[in-house]
Image (cartoon, rainbow, N blue to C red; front, top):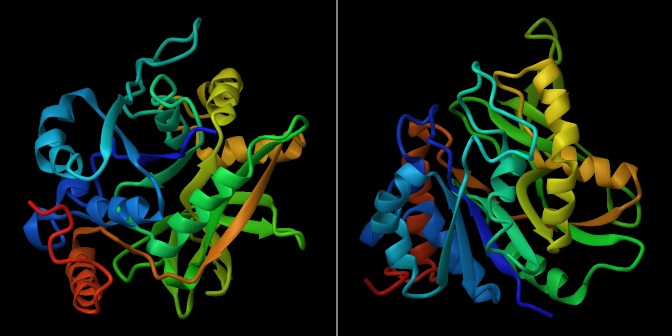
Length: 308
C-alpha cells in the first residue's frame, strides 16, 4: 500500500485576515502555522506534502514556504483554478471566487495516487491528530463494498476565536464511532464555553456547548475520494449554479454526507483534545505566536524546525 501524503489547502487569500495569512510568520526563523502542521505530520510518518495554491502565488509561495519545507519533506504543487470544471460546464460571468474546499481537493487529483490527509493551511491542529489519521489510513484500505475514510474531531470549545466568527462542521457520531452527519456552519461566534449561530440571519440564536464535536477540515481519504468527487462534481455544480452561482461552494462535508447517505463510505471519527490555534483574523496572531512560543519552550518543537 502506498504511504499517505499530506494535502494542504493554501489557495485562499485570507480576505478577513487582510493578507496572505498562509505565509505570515508566527514563529522564529520565518515559520508559519503551515510549518508546525507539516512538522507534526512528518513526525507522524508523512513524507510528502502537496500544496494547493493559485498559479499567481507560486513563486512567492515557493520562496516563503515551499523551499524551506522541502528540506524535510518531498514537496509537490497543485493549482486551484476557477475554470477547472467538468466537460460541458463554464464559469458564469458573476463568479469570481473558487468553488470551495472540495474543488481545492480535486485540484490535486493529478498528483495524488494513494491515501491522503487534508488540512487547512491556516489552522494549527496539534500533533495527536496527525498520528491518528496516518495510522488509520495505513491500516484501513477501502473495502469492496465501502470506502474507508477518517476525520479528526475536535471539541467546539477548543476551536473558537474571540475576534469574530469561524466556520466549523458540526458532527453527529454513531455509537460505533463513525460519522453519521456533518453540517457546515459558516458563522459560529464564541459564546461562553461554546459557540452560537443564527439560522435566520440574526433574528434568533442557537447555542452549542463546548463539548460539541466539530470538524476542522482535517480528513483522511483514500484515492477513491478524488475519483468519486470528480464524478459527483456535476451534481453539486448543478445545485450551486441554480441556487447561488456567485458564491455557492462545493464543501467537503457536502461530499461526505452524500457518500454516507448512499452507504458508499464509512468515516471514522478520531477525537482530539488538542486546542486549535488559527489566524482567521489579524487580531488572532499575537495569541498564536504566544502559544507556539510556549510549546517550543516546553520542548514540543525545536526552535528551528527545518534548520534554516
